[in-house]
Image (cartoon, rainbow, N blue to C red; front, side, top):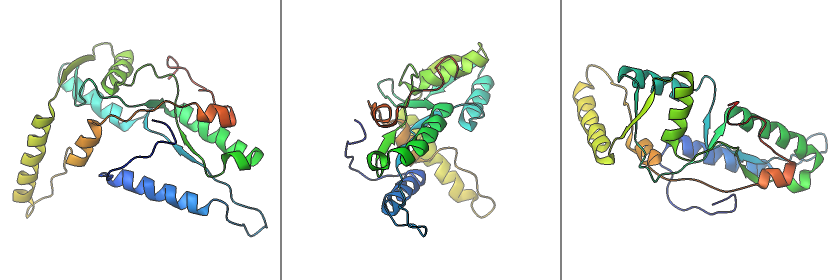
Length: 208
């Protein structure tokens, strides 16, 4: 898809719901008159899966892999695809958008832009393996963990949590909505940011 694709279905994750609410607030505010007589112009940048220095999820995956002798297992089916963007390029897109909202407000006002760069694959497990193995060559790709196995583990954890609830509240290691998100394909093709405000990735894949 692209920025013009309409999606149906319910957003399961609270994070996704709050992002949708935030987008609605931005679009509702776009075009409002300001106290100085001007007009508020705003656009939306949708960053899909972002990676970069200090990413907590990469640190956690690395520790988990090292605990398994460097083996990095994964949850996504091998046919699942998702766009990934380096955090520096997402930030650069924000800078360019903010600049061009002032220069070309009629073009950018109320628009939606997906983030993108030259990250070479849409297979999330391959992106993670390449990033982690660059830092530590001992990290290698393991095997796919079936959906049904994770589903059973989540249900078992729920039962244990209910039993222990009077004494403590174990933190869920994974929720069903998050698992469903992980195994779902979400990818897009776009050059809208390039056409509207001259965006080009500031950092290459090798630099990221």
